[in-house]
Amino acid sequence: MPKPNEILDELKKIKYPGFTRDIVSFGIVKDIEVAYASVTVVLTMASAKPEVVAKIVADVKQVVGAAVASGGETGGCDVGTASDLGGEAYCRGRERQGRRR
Image (cartoon, rainbow, N blue to C red; front, side, top):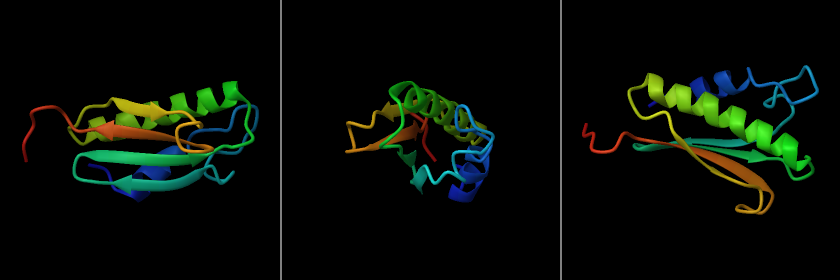
């Protein structure tokens, strides 16, 4: 499982749609939690347009999925929308089913 700082470094590669700055420098990444079987990234985007939120969440899903997959786990992510967390979006990578450590 990747470390939070490794995921943060990857998230710095995601540009905010329409800008040259990344989502980390805009302060959108609120929290990164790495647990035994999951990675959760919490994003704060309360004032963004729905299409911007969708693009950022899709990009985060791809980046977190790739980071999780590089560690041998599945690359899939569960994605919640802003309404699920009261103004926040999240992406959670899952450990491969049936795999034991």
